[in-house]
Amino acid sequence: MRTTGRPAAAALPFLAVFLVAGLDVTLRGLWPVDETRYAAVAWEMWWRGDFVLPRLLGEPYSHKPPLLFWLIHAGWLPFGVSDLWPRLLPWCLALAQLLALRALARDLAPDQPRLPEHVTWLHCGLSLWLAWAGVLAFDVLLGFCVLMALRPVARSLGEARPLAVLPLGAWLGLALLAKGPVALIFVLPAALMAPWLKSGSVNPGLPEVAAHGLRVVTAVLLALGLAALWVLPAAGLGGEAYANAILWGQFAGRIVHSFAHREPWWWYLPWLPLLLFPWSLCPGLFLAGHAADEVQTRAARRLLAGTVLAAFLILSGISGKQLHYLVPLLPLAVLWLALRLSCTEERFGPRAPAVAVGIGACALAPVALGFIGHPRWPLWVPELSPLLPLALLTLALAGWHIASLARQDRAVVGPWIQGIGVLLLLQIGIIRLADSDFRPQAVLPHLQQAERAGHGWAYLGGYAGEFDLSGRLRDPPTLPADATAVATWARQAHPQAPLLRMFRGELPAGLPPPLLVQPWRGKRLAMWRAADVAASERLREFLGP
Image (cartoon, rainbow, N blue to C red):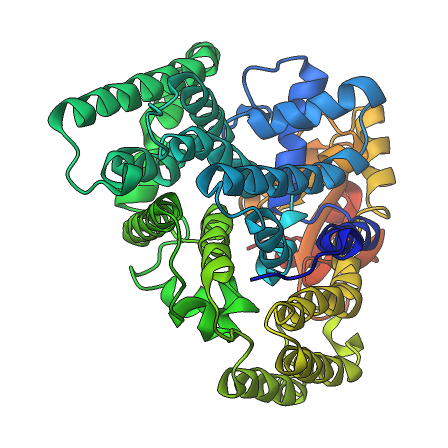
């Protein structure tokens, strides 16, 4: 199977990713709550000069390990603190992940020289991966570390190649520092099943299995030792509660009885077509037979299939579920598809029924937009262009037409255009408008002035550092819990100290005029002075829960 032989065409997937990345960095900033929270943690570590204990609003932050924060610091060190580097870093990690995937492809199937090119086309066309690649989060970083950790496992599939302990342990340790013990889910199944796949063997001898198992255990101990270089000092600095959280509480809480994002075991299944779009429109990639191939290629396919299936089942059994938890699995699933693409001689383009479903969804989009008056819609939804569904429909038809007319060695281009095109349309048609809900520039001068004057400020509702990095703020706000706490704060605070609260709809009549009102996170954000809060009982009633 050949996609193309021209260097310019081989570079096209990379150019498309750069285009999507450029639009993403240009059209939006850091979005609350997660991106701004992680940026706030990195900023607080930076200005405190404490690169061991992550903190948020002055308290130890136990939810995530520090590797992502350290990478943010690495960019700030030569160039100074900026909002731009945390926006560029995710795309740098995405590029690193793509290069690691190509390297893993070469290690897994050295008899398939076109495999790195095939996997590049398939991976760069994944709409969901492109959508998540620019988000300041931990999943793409974890995915990169997982791919690098799997490279020594892939090399061990060859004849007379024992598992390399040092690279496996080092990269697994970095994966632990990227997102914690969940990293083991993506690496250990592959490492443990490798002896049964090596050179096509189904019955490895006991000495071989024992030697391999000892190497895996040694690599895991090395990884744990590397993670302990941070865990032990951080636990000592953060206190007993923080130590319990990072050593056991977070991991056990998410697995046994999720304290966030709890879903049933089958929750991921309906999302699989979206996760693999546009390749989910090409059943030939999943169902078609394949030509005869080398022993190591068969072993590679089985290793990838077993790793993806094992990790998927484990993640489905964990109580806490979010769609992006599966992002580290996408490169492995795509590499499995690329191996089939390299070996199959059958057509694999989009099938008419699958495309019809996509076209029907595009046709129904205007009906969905008819509900734009719903009170819980963000304020920017009425500004969506009615041409967006038409553009999506045109894109679906164009991709199908290209795939149906193309030769077998070029049919991948049609679905790839659909995957890239959907992301570009979403960026231009939706992301650009949605960013208007997350612009803090009008709020920041008030908060900066209050901090410089020592007045402090207050925020009603959950605050997770949304303004900290953008405003270079250091003092956490007061967070009143109820109307009584609001009244107490207003009496004791400086008269000019600002208070912020989000609300839906319009402000009630008879309230003192706010200092500002702006869209914020699908609602509106208003700001009053403490003097106005203390003087107006009606305002205090409105501000109460």
